Image 1: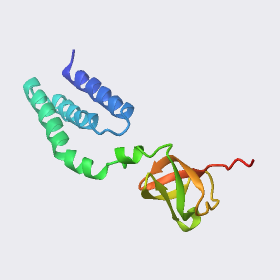
Image 2: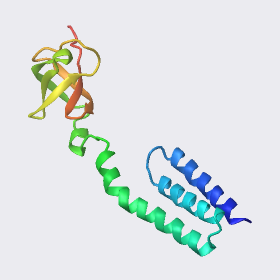
Image 3: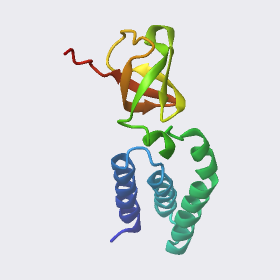
Length: 149
């Protein structure tokens, strides 16, 4: 089989893997390495040169861009500590008003900034709440309905 065709197939395979992996930016560097090897093969370079260029370009790009990608593609995930408050009950200590971007709740004796997860309605001080999620540093809460007796 012709080496130009092999490099073309590898280029397409790595490109497809990058698209499927949705933004990991791992296979794109091997895709570029395969493209360089494809061009080298088309221009008549030896198989040894093609292989060396493929591996060296791929590895240099992978290692060289890793710190840059790490710095700029960090997704904000709630900390493990934040996940511990999910489904906890607490009390509103500062009125929760999403429109004013204010509010705080007491959970296990600790104060957390909070937002209403259900709607834009204000939750008054003293209301009982339950944590439904965490967004950034805010506990997303909903008011617990009081049962009238």
